[in-house]
Amino acid sequence: MRHNAFIMTSTATLCMLAGSVLASTTVVPECIASQQELDMHAIASGMFQQLPHEHQKKIALAGGIGSEGFDLCALENGAQIDMEGVVDPGITAHEYLDLLVSDELLARLSEDQIKLMNNIADRIDDGESMPFLCFAPDTDREYAYAINQLLEFQFQVTFQQTTRWSRTATDGNGLGQGDPTTLTYSFVPDGTFIPNTAGLGSGSSVLFSWLNGRYGSTATWQALFDQVFDSWAEVTGLSYVYEPNDDGVNMNGAAGILGVRGDVRIGGFNFSGDGNGGVLAYNQFPNDGDMVFDAFDTFFNVTGNNSIRLRNVAAHEHGHGLGMLHVCPANQTKLMEPFVSTAYDGPQLDDILNGHRHYGDPTEPNDDLPIAIDMGSLDATDIYALANMSIDDNSDIDIFRFNLTERAAITVLVGPQAGQYQSGPQTQSCGSGPVVDYRSIQDLRIDLYSSDNIFIPIASANTEGAGGVDTLSFDLEQTGLYYIIVSAESNVNNVQRYQISALTQELPPVECPADLTGDGVLDFFDVSAFLSAFNTMNPAADFNNDGSFDFFDVSGFLNAFNAGCP
Figure 1: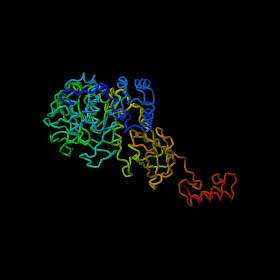
Figure 2: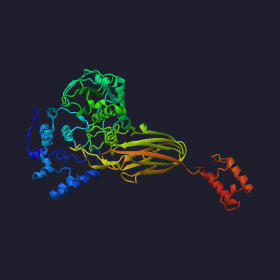
Figure 3: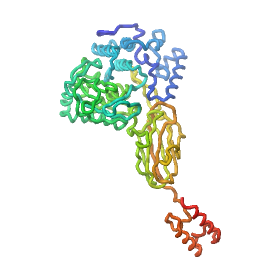
Figure 4: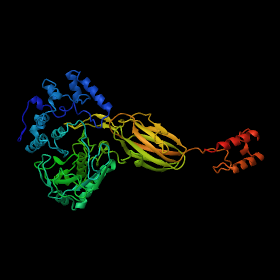
């Protein structure tokens, strides 16, 4: 597949529009789909294959579950093609591109668009790592889908995540799933060379001249990028530090070094042959993460709503830089949809779940007693609440600690903070996706420990199952340090977002009948007070409440005195 046109294949093959080609392996996102959802699709797909073709066609046209791999075009041409036989794992990127592009799409593409797709396939076949692209809202969806699938070909992924950062300038090496991470970012000086890593040409960065001309000052537009990174930091375990230095070494390949350049470097040049709209920006995956804009694209000339166009494109691109892929449906509810939108501002629920899976929640690290989340001091009438927490997989735990200053009854509630919605890999139309209930990914458990014994919980709760709100209630008679641990009872390697609240209430007063002076200490003065009350037949000395003052009252007092106060 070279020059300015694709090698033409049979009509039946080209009729396989994107979506049916990889459906058998991209039905449900493995990284954030529940096992129940996976099982349901597997069963439905098996049942679907047993139906007559006419019934299959009706279900497929309606987008029914189990029909994701059904090829309507092939049926119209007389046969249902076995997609597993078509998509051979050993084929080249160019051969894969043949399968993605229909006759109708080929007729709509410009020479520059064809050139871009060929360039991408060339680089993948040469073993180069390719960044993901962000498209303007009016871009041809079949064209955007074909490019997205071609880019995913380098990973052979079946979900919406690639690998996360394993090394940064601040944290060093050895970072893994769920680990909180600090990233530095810098802006490359104009003149920095940007190599052709996306098939959009190469050039020298003109980021400063472009955005200074648009905003009037460097501080104004750099503050917009600060907001972008802040928006990711607020909802995930990521932290960001602006690196004011950038040595201008070529982009896409140089690791971050403190005082030299950021982990994430931002630049821009005029993309070759793309014009206005189309591809707005692209971004490398970890451990690179460099972000490149189509400088002077008129899409960014609109700066309303605090330049939400620029900010959402940057936030989306950085999502790729965190290891995230595109997600469907494109209904303007998720930042990582393949087409930029201004219907939201920054990361949304699906993006937050994605971020938590890779980098944990904003309170990380919190999985050891010395670094437990500090709930502060609680008295007998306190309320504590914290949202946007998560267990990034079934081995993760969150530890909370509090200091109880007076005896109290404590109630701890833990429940899901997510939703049920469509979420799946990018398809040609990007109009649907499997419905996943992210409220019931993990069955959460609550354990309460005293600092006197951190091995055996004094109370536990795990009764409501996945998706339910578990409630732990216990009377704490002793003041001191306590720990709450939230964990996953289920065996699901996936993320569960939740919220936690704790309520303390006063316990009934402790009764100590022998403490007649009320000073909390049993001593001679209590004995003297009893004898005085006994001699005067004061009701305080009637220990058995029979209306008489006799030996039984004396015996009752002595027993209570010897027993002591709680």
